[in-house]
Image (cartoon, rainbow, N blue to C red; front, side, top):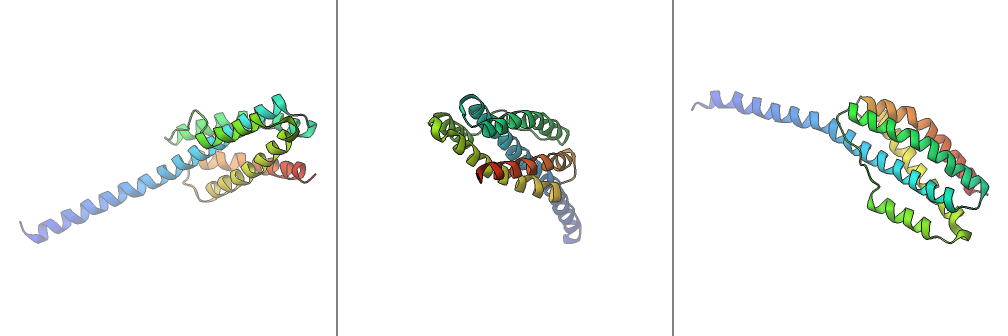
Length: 167
């Protein structure tokens, strides 16, 4: 076969492959965000359940009650946005988060409130970074819109938990 006939075919095949990879990158980014965001949300809910059931400090228990309400609402919003963007969210808490929840559940009552607030400080710092980054540079779609919509609540949670841990 003549090289002049093969070259256009090879170029076309290469461009098609590159286009497929480019199309996969936004979906991969959306999948990674959806997985991390849903996992973080489930962790915050499970940790709040422990605090609500076993905690002693009124402000920490109130924070936990608010986390149950707010993150209980955010989970279905994330799931619907992920579905609209053609990606899935995990349906159960990941192993690392489960260990953290189990550690909270087994903490003695004298240390539980502070341990809960400490985990929430870190969790909300991480969540704000994750949602800020995705709402600014994630691929356009429902997840990006939802990240931007949820971000102010996460920032508010972070400010609250910073106040509670500085006491």
